[in-house]
Length: 406
Image 1 (cartoon, rainbow, N blue to C red):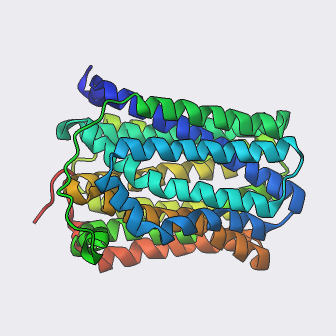
Image 2 (cartoon, helix red, strand yellow; image 1 turned 180 degrees about the vertical axis):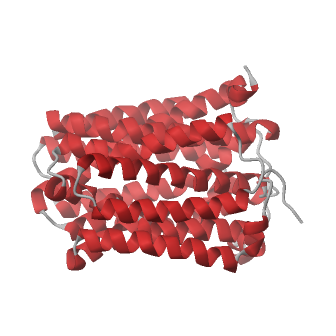
């Protein structure tokens, strides 16, 4: 294949790409369906926050084990088993819906198990990609891996909204089927080579990911920038409130709102793939996060559906620039023998920014209202971008992505 599709010359990556897409697609259908049904039956913004919190806490509590599992055991095996566990969670919620026993506590308990699966899946999945494509093709693979997730984040919420419009069991059943397909694809990948010195398990081994990130200030700054910007600026958890109470949309409308960020991200990844970031990567990173915050603030004020969708698209586009730069920095600047543990720490940062950010938004909205919560978060994200530009000058001066710079 041509250089633009270099990663797809490798059959293992083709299967990996398909598995990531199906798993992300399934997770999006499950997420939008559970959130809509939870708010539809309880009208509680706080419970929307709890949905994010129970999925984040397992990753936080298990961080020293999830990365070690990715480094010590086969990353393909870990990824496949966790996808199967996610499928079991989808089936559990399916049975609750079929039996009309959608109890919020039981649902949150199931999502806690789902969070445990995701905690092990994230570092294994991120680390596996490096083992199945040559280093020279990894930047291309990283772009398409991000594309698979973002494409799923477009079609998944729309499909989830439409399927839930038919019935909850149909939506949850579709999610379970997609998880099963993802599991089959992962286990069909030949066992890849993986460097592992298998040192004795001690405190230093367990904390290896934290130690490496602390020493690499560029990596530390990049992932902590995303942590605080999305933690304070994220608005995903409140989309059911915006869809029903502010914009007057139904379940399918919620799907459109959830998809808008993905649409913007896919457009941006297409631009980045056609015109790779070759220079001024650090400056581009900070500018993108600043515009992410500005778009979030405008979305918070909006009461018009088309403007809200446009701002969500811009949020997704600017966030994708940050994701792309951070992913290349993290994977190519990290030695393979600690990559799983480093990705486990990164997954904590991502979980804190996403799931914990959803919890923050839900709990704040319960007291301050959704508009103040979203607008204030967007302004805070702008401040984070400006502050990190001064706290981490080495990122600001980073020009090339592919090799560490002295």
